[in-house]
Length: 491
Ligand SMILES: Cc1cc2nc3c(=O)[nH]c(=O)nc-3n(C[C@H](O)[C@H](O)[C@H](O)COP(=O)(O)OP(=O)(O)OC[C@H]3O[C@@H](n4cnc5c(N)ncnc54)[C@H](O)[C@@H]3O)c2cc1C
Ligand SMILES: *[C@@H]1O[C@H](CO)[C@@H](O)[C@H](O)[C@H]1NC(C)=O
Ligand SMILES: *[C@@H]1O[C@H](CO)[C@@H](O)[C@H](O)[C@H]1NC(C)=O
Ligand SMILES: *[C@@H]1O[C@H](CO)[C@@H](O)[C@H](O)[C@H]1NC(C)=O
Ligand SMILES: *[C@@H]1O[C@H](CO)[C@@H](O)[C@H](O)[C@H]1NC(C)=O
Ligand SMILES: *[C@@H]1O[C@H](CO)[C@@H](O)[C@H](O)[C@H]1NC(C)=O
Image (tube, rainbow, N blue to C red; front, side, top):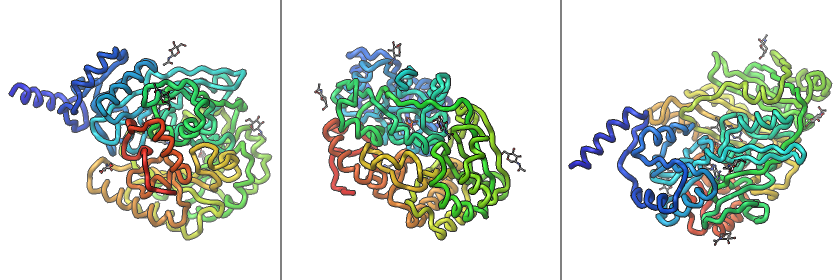
């Protein structure tokens, strides 16, 4: 009876404490986990379900609220010993265990893939050390991109990673990482020189480089269940103090012209120029259409790039703007897309580009879709990403011309409108995929994606499974789309 009343009390407190309808009943094994962490003297904060405000704050950190899981507890280790203890307790009690860095997984996988997982938060792994001489940075995986961008900027360097400054280093770089410098310096994962990782058996690997197959696996699949990566050594790159942002505006109807000219001239653009085509349906009566580029050099130098000028002339834009500033300014000036309900989609296109029919279908979808759509298409052709062999690291997506990143903001988690939009997006994806390559980008993770193993990892997949079996044989680090220890899928 007392426990019944207590649960009602918990329930009431919880509704007021959080917007989430959280189930407050204990997870199986909660008492044992408390005991285990105490026994091994875990030092950092541990937030169980009954620590309402701390637990809810941890939940609240999640970016995409479409899918929320309620972990058994959030543990916040202070150092690798603490990580070892959390892993040890997860193993002893057979609790699925996941790492959490920036909380920006589109499927909420840093909360686990089901309720009652154990979340190892990396928020105290937040050191950044720059070595200007060797042009390297050693960083904790718990930081967001913004402080990394700030620190390397202060030293006159840059690092190629994503556009959203609040994305976490851990999940992002270990799964690829593309952004405003990709055409010049490749994927973030291509610029990882070493890693520190705590394995399922508790061993701290201080230099993953010395375990070549593990090191191969974590650069592409490192956010899919090989261990808790606590720090990364990165190659950083000197760049000019002043760079140029080039923004070219079009009418929505000019998209076919824009792509036909870009298909031909884009691959020859100087690698200092990274090009995004941005099409958003939520601004004004007609979907906004523009090209948004970063050029590593001055506006004058960019004006001397013959094929870029040729492109501008032939594509007949409405408006062309050159803005000079530091790269860091452009990395953080952008308005932050707030927490909410999102569904992503990802498409790679080979060297033929996007067929006319496909482009028409894409435009029709954007115009008729009842939810908003944000799309960012990266020009990959002619860039550094494609100079690296497909099997060099486990991130395989090379040799493509474009990548389209679609994100659909939804009104909420469960309404009819949300369900319809998700279904329409799903139908669109099926049809549009006929025009695209088979592959999709694992960082835009999507539980509904058919044959995700091959789409995300292609020919890397089987080797990834073998390496998983070796380093996490009992599958401690597991959720719906983690790399399994066995498979009968052959890609
Ligand atoms: C608003 C927004 C903008 C984005 N923009 C871009 C972009 O411009 N370019 C791009 O390439 N991608 C982009 N992404 C995708 C982004 O790269 C992925 O969502 C990425 O996985 C998020 O990493 P995280 O650390 O923030 O997420 P988390 O949710 O913390 O982690 C994601 C996954 O990685 C695992 N993981 C996290 N940290 C570690 C670790 N230290 N060791 C082992 N596993 C770990 C987690 O268990 C989880 O499965 C964007 C996503 C969002 C939501
Ligand atoms: C961060 O750096 C400080 C100072 O060098 C060090 O004492 C601490 O252990 C580091 N933290 C982690 C989590 O590596
Ligand atoms: C843990 O696994 C790694 C990789 O297989 C191995 O090198 C190490 O010796 C193992 N540690 C223990 C304590 O078994
Ligand atoms: C290209 O970028 C590099 C910095 O990464 C810079 O040194 C060089 O001057 C730039 N070249 C041109 C042509 O702008
Ligand atoms: C051109 O674009 C710039 C920057 O986006 C904007 O400030 C300006 O108002 C635009 N001019 C026209 C004529 O649309
Ligand atoms: C996760 O995977 C399990 C089986 O592994 C499945 O039963 C479940 O429906 C999946 N959950 C979601 C939300 O897709």
